Amino acid sequence: MSQLPPGRRARSGAAVWALLCLLAGGLQAAALAWPFPGWSLPGTAPGQPCGWLQIASLAVLVLALQRSGGVGRAAWRGWLFATAWLVGTFWWLFVSMHTYGGLAAWMAVLAVLALAGALALYYALAAALLYRWAPVSRSAQALLFAALWTLAELARGRWLTGFPWGAGGYAQVDLMAAWAPLVGVYGMGFGAALLAYALASGVAWVGAALGYWLGSPARRSVPGSGIPPLMARSTAFQGDGLWRTASTAIVWLALVWSLLGGGEAWRAYGQRDTTSAGTLRVWLLQGNVAQDEKFEAGTGVAQALAWYPQQISAAVAAAKAGMANAPQLVVAPETALPLLPQQLGPEFWQPLLDGLAQPGVAVPVSTLLGLPLGSFSQGYTNSAWGLSPASAAAARAQLTRTTDPQAPVNLVSDGFYRYDKHHLVPFGEFIPPLFRWFIDLMRIPLGDFNRGTLGQAPWAVGGQRLATNICYEDLFGEELAASFRDPAQAPTVLVNLSNIAWFGDTVAIDQHLHISRLRALELGRPMLRATNTGATAVIDHRGVVTHQLPRLTRDRLEATVQGRSGTTPYARWTAQWGLGPLWGVCLVLVLLIAASRRRARLPHG
Image 1 (cartoon, rainbow, N blue to C red):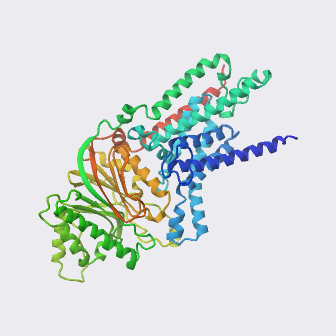
Image 2: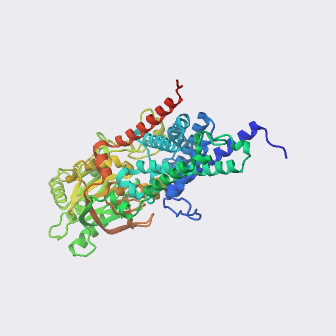
Image 3: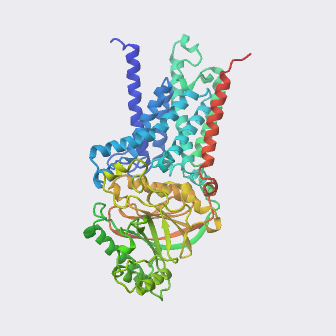
């Protein structure tokens, strides 16, 4: 059989590597939450993250970059990997745009591809710079790759206010949990990138070593023969380099051990300064209102206005009866009441307020409701409204004083707890400049909110301080940490109100649950999740799901949660400086490695 011409052989090899990059990118997405319930790989489970798969898939990209043979091809392979990864991560945006937004299917597909392709440019640049600046030392190469990859992740978290959904560190919520309260999700991604480069370099080293020892004497006489460009020349294949190779391997094994947990003592180290702050009994409500009916007066609105007050009344009745399961807090999800308060008349508010304001209850019941606040003329916010017995009584008195039945109901007063969503979703909750035409192609109710402030005060309930966040705000740990600037007033419990019904029964539900788990780990606080369709859950401060409702069911989740006081290292440094230290460390690493490589190339003498 005749051999292929060199040019054709090179093109065939490039096509194979391109396909491997696409496959590896898809596996990177699957590592965040395994999406195939009927089929799995070793170490994977439906809906669960797999840290090893994330590291292995990223290692395939590293191998592809080591064999890319040029800056342009390295950028192309990095872009293919990242595009496949991002499309596989948030493909469910198609559901929100087409199924519920009414956008034509082909336009929704193009929109998802365009978003993924645009965000993938960060990673393409990282791959190109890695090839351009790669030093001789494999350890320095690993550091450069991890720094550049992390900078790409950080940049993605900033563009158009940031869309960091699916960052690689989320796949490490179990495998590298010990690092979350120290360096957070991006630091965990940095560590995973180091391990991926080490794995890829180990595979390449074994292949090159076999090729060296099995090759001809003439080939073995050329140091570094056959070693990929990013691997550079190495003495590992010569006798005098064996001890150096062995010592390097020992260092890497120690790094792997520490990155992957380092024992139970190390896993508890990041939370050493947090302690119990007592318990809180909660009911978390999951209304399971279909998204295509949620804003329809005769169906979804009617269901919400009936079921959620019914559950609050049941909680009050349980408290009056002194039942053991009586909650201190009832939480309803994001836009559980999909109307402004003034759109609901006294006939809705009066019985609800009467129940919450009833005196004589040994353990009072408070409720946290997701609803829009404001007005159509002056703008509205995506908000959570906290009603305690005292504020309910004040609102009832205000409602009683209203003599004109046609007057708009205004229940907002100083006694109410109010949280206004700060980090809005581009296109879904605010319209970026020049994109009004795109939003007009869809039917998205309440799609242009005003923005709340950062670091809003927590709400005191049952001896705990509750910090609310809404929907994908829990993607931004550095913003949640703003509430920890004063440790004495830092929240003891985090509460997330979400409505993932926009994305149907998809892996988005599992991905969002693991995002909340990582926030709980980073900040050393339990996270309560009240959602419309799932995942309604209680997560403890170690990131462990202790209670959870089945998705797409209408039910309430009854649980007791342990609040926490004290702060983790991550909460302390991000409260003061945000993600600045991570940006700084990565930039310094890149600049030092790039500068040292240029110095090494200067002529001597």
